[in-house]
Structure formats: C-alpha cells, structure tokens
Amino acid sequence: MTTEELREILSNPKGKIFAFDLDKTLCVEGCWGEKEMLNATPVKGMFELIDWIACNGGVILIFTARPSRFYSVTFAWLYYNNIYFHGICMQYKPHAHIYVDDLAFNVNDISKSFFLKVKKERRKQ
Image (cartoon, rainbow, N blue to C red):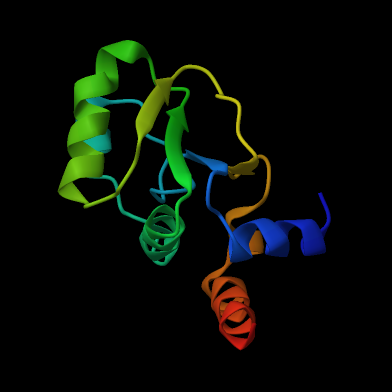
C-alpha cells in the first residue's frame, strides 16, 4: 500500500476495517502474564487515532497472539484504558483494510503528526 492509498483511507475511514495489534502497538510491552497484561503501559497517541477512526465510521478490531484464556484480562485492560473497539481477535489476524502492528505498518508510520496532517487535509476539502 502506498502512502497516498493509506492517506485516502485515513481521510475517509467509513466502512473500512482497521485491525490494531495489542502488544507493542497499543501497549508498550509485549505481555504474556496476567499481571503484565493488567499493568501494561499504553502507547500515547494511538487511542486518539482509534477514537477518530471509530467516530468517522471505521470498524476497530483488536488482535493479539495472546491465548484465549486471557480474553477477560485483555478486555479489562482495553476497557480500563477507554479504548473503543468492535471486537477482539485472540490468536489470529482478522481480515482488515489496514493493519496497525509493530510487525506490519510500524506504529511510527501512523504517527500523531501524520494523523493530524490527514485531518487538516480533510478539513480543506
């Protein structure tokens, strides 16, 4: 996907599916124990991006390689950190138009400054 294609999708996310990885993308650490999961440090700027996408009609899926036995802990962390989402996918990557993942688009590729640039461009239209 080119930067222009990404910019186009982000400028009009309605009906598009965005899949966000959890560990090392929405939280700083990779977490494999319950205590780590509950105390994980959120990545600044990502929640605002998720809120903006969701408020503009995008579908938010959270995916993780965590075993399904950690579903309730994962849900609790997302809820506690006020992260809006439509679904959680444990141990598989769902179909999506955009993947935000430390192993796909780097978290830094969709930085807050890039996001703000897209918002400004959309306002000009």
